[in-house]
Structure formats: structure tokens, C-alpha cells
Image 1: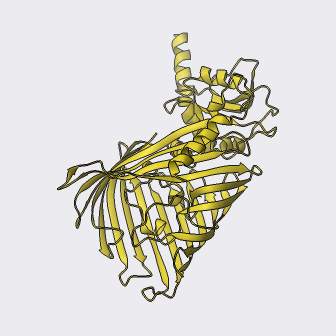
Image 2: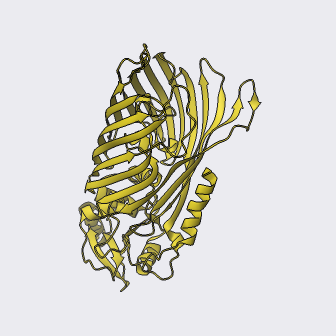
Image 3: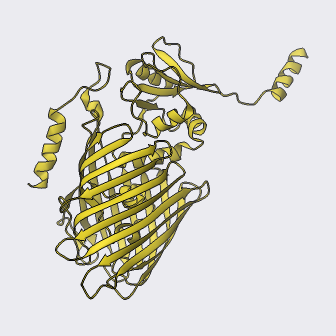
Length: 337
Length: 138
């Protein structure tokens, strides 16, 4: 079924099935629908490619909170829209659409939630909160999104051990292929059956810490991946420290692979006066199918006048494999609305 | 001379600025009489979503520039409005609805009077018979 029809069906369902809401008789069921989104304009000037300006993301999300059983969520996005390229000039002829998330949450108890549909895989905090206005860097670390399935079409059960500290366990399963997946490049993989879990030990205003596991079968291949990862973030008054480490065992008969893939990064952000922030990051990543590992350093400035708006400029220096992280200057403007 | 002495004594013995108390308020029909600091935090972190009787909880906020919001964030979370605002933005991306912002304390009181599940914070003690005070911070 085309994705546009699904989106219309979703919105139609919300509009035509309005359950009663608050005790107040004057309030409307529309009060339970929340519409928001974010947009990112990205400028990239890698050493080996043309300078380009693109509308990296124009994302709209609609959520409804009706009752314990009906809490739908839709995120539709237009992405990678080239606006200008050196040599080619202005352009607007390459628009991609995708349904990023489409699910319903059922609150079984106050501590247990069942999610059904397409959602972000609970592999780390960066994947769950990846919107450009909410992260510090224009370029995402390879550790945070490579090597594992980032989206799940299936079921997820979340149990909260303690609401205040955020101590919770999330277990998910994808029985078949991902719904409405984005086109993949030659070095990326599409996943078939996926199962995984993440134990969030703490997630509050000051720090989060999580451990995750994922088992994934790559589509149209004998390749199986088992990954374990740990990620955390600590917000101190004078700095913010973030890190993630990942190890993946790759099981396949393909001879170009050498068994394991691993990597990690450490990122630090230091607040400066007038809403400016200094960003630094170091990442090392060893690919299972390549001889050469990648070492990436990032240094940059982020201007964030309010939490929902950010202007970023960063220099990325990569040694080794440049397949994912090319050396160059990157900048972006991102707004959450 | 006596007046001058009293003024000088007041200047030295009293703090330069005296904060009003901070009141956590809810609709009088809500079947609870008190709310602990950790419950208030859980509600404003969008982690506690329902009252014990099953009604939806609707936390109400004041604008980012309001002094009461500064005090509320410091009292309940020992944090800053910016940090809490950033947290709510992340929750919005996760599909959770952040607290509804009302422009003034009077608007917060009117909202709580009208909506049974609402909870808010104000510095001026509400006089309305439709409101109950669940917690008071000095």
C-alpha cells in the first residue's frame, strides 16, 4: 500500500474516532492531538566532494493521547533534498519521503507499555533522540547507527522499574522486514528478523546510562549480527560528556568479512558565554569488511539560543576509511517546532 | 531618628529580597490531599501520567522567563529551566506532550479550576474554593 494512503488512513482514524477526553465538558478531543516537527538545513564541504546545501530533514510528527489503548504516533519526513551544489547551482528536483515512525502505544499498566508498529530501535540514546536540533553535532557517530538495525517494524514491550530515575527495560522484535524502509546505499544493510533489548539504568536530567543487545538477520544474505553496546551521557554544570561503545560479532560465509566489528566515541561539550558551546569528539571504528579502521576527530561550535534551535559548524578530520566520515567542513541550522 | 533606626535595623536584619512561598495546586475534586516532591518531579518529567483514580494528569507550566518557574525548577529538580526545557524537547520527539504553558499565574489558577486533572504551581496563594494546595515550598 503506498505510504501516502497509510498516512491519510492514520490521520483519518484519529479524526473519525474521537474518544472522550478530560473531565471538563468544554474541552475538545483535538486537545489530545499534538503536532510538531523539525527541520534541518545542512551545508557540507568535504575535501573530496563538491560543496552542497541540502534540506537534510523536514519532519512532521503527529501524536494522539486518547486513552490507555489508543496513543498513536506518526512521523513523516522529507529528507536529503538538494538545494544547491557547486557547479550545478540551485536545484529542487530530488525529494525523498519516508514514514519514520508509525505506531500505537498501549498502556498495559502504568509501568508497562506495548508498542506496535514501526518505531526507532532502542539501541542507544542517539538513535531514539536523533533529531538534529536535539543533538550537538551535524554528523552522527558511526558507532551510533552503523552495524545494527535502526528501525523496527514489530512489537516492543517497555517496563519501567522506577519512573523517577528512568530505570527501564525495553524488549523488541521485528518478525519480518522493515515497513517503508529508506533506499539503502551499497555499504548499508537491510535487516529481516531482528530482536533486541535495552536496559536503561538511569535517564534523568543529569545523566543516562544504557546497555543494549541486538540480534539481526540481514535480508537476502546469510549474514547474522549479534551486537552489544553501552552508551551514556553526563551533564555537569561546566561540561557535558557522552560516550558509546559497540561490539558486533558478524557471522557469515562471505570471505570479505573478518568476524568482528567494534568501535566507540567520546564526545565533550563545554558551554561558553552567550549560548555558544564548544564541541569535540573522537571516534575509532573497525569495520568487519574492511582492512582499514576509521579514526575521526571533530571540533566545532554550536550556538543554541534556546533548546529547540541550534546553529552548528564543525570540522571533521578522518584518517583511515572515509566511507562514512569524510574530512571537511560541515554546518547546519536546525529548528524544532 | 527612631524611624531611621528602624529602617537601618530592617536593612541589616532582613534579607534583601524575600521570596513568596511556592504552591503546588490542583482541582478540588481530585481525590488526593498531598503530593510529595518526587511525585511532582515524576509528573513534570512526564513519567507519571495518571492520578490514582485513573484521570489523566495535565501539568501546567509558566513561561520560561517567569521567576516562579525558576524557583519551581530549582526546588523540585535542583536544576535550571533551560535543562528542563531541553528535556521536554527530547520528550516531544519521543511522542510525549510537554506541560501546557499558561501566560500568568492567574491563567494557571483558572486552568486548574476548569480541568480536573490539571496541576500547576504559583507564588500567590490561590483564594479560589475550586483549588486545593497539594504542597507548599518555602
